[in-house]
Amino acid sequence: MERLALYRLVPTARADDPNWDRAPNRGEVLVRAKSSGDACGVGGIFTTEVRASAFLDEKLYTVRDEPANRYPSAGPRTVLEGVAARV
Image (cartoon, rainbow, N blue to C red; front, side, top):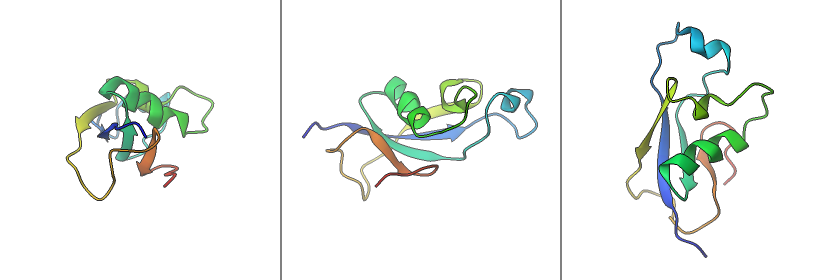
C-alpha cells in the first residue's frame, strides 16, 4: 500500500471574510494525501456542495504538515477527521 503524508487543512480567513460566500467554512480537516496540493483536492472530493470547495481557495484555507499521530501514513487518499470523514 502506498505511503502518503498527513496534512491538516486549516481555515485562515476571518469569519466575516466575503470569500466565504463562495463556499462554507468546514473547519479543520485532516487528510491523507500525496502532497500539500493534493491535500486540498482530497478535502474537496468529500464535500457535496455545488459551489467550489473552500479547500481549494488559498485565501480561505492553508495546508499544514501533520506529524505522525494515530493514523498511519499507509492507506488511501482520504479525509480522516472533519467534514465527511471516511475512516
